[in-house]
Length: 88
Image 1 (cartoon, helix red, strand yellow):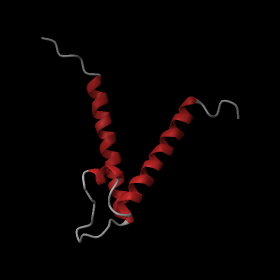
Image 2: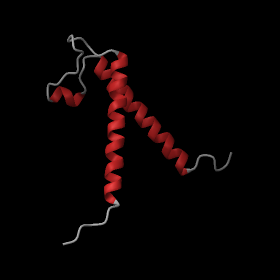
Image 3: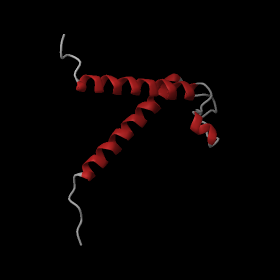
Image 4: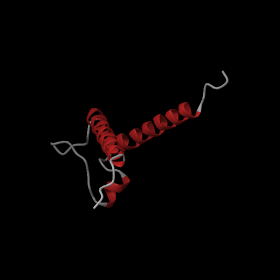
C-alpha cells in the first residue's frame, strides 16, 4: 500500500523497537547477575530481600516502573517549557 509507512508510523515502530531492545537488556542484566554495565562501574547490584537474584516478574515490574517514571518526567519538562518566561 503506497503511503502506509509514513514518517509517523516509522517513528512509532522505531520507538517500540528501541523500547523493546532496552527492556531486553535491562531485564536480562537484572535477572542474570543483578547488574547492568553502569551498575558494575559503581559496584551496585539489584537483589531480592533475601539476597537472591531478581525474578523475571520483578525485573519486568521494575522496568515498567522506570518507563512510567521517565514518561512522567518527560511530560513535566515538556509542560514547563511552555510556561511563559519569568521577567524581572
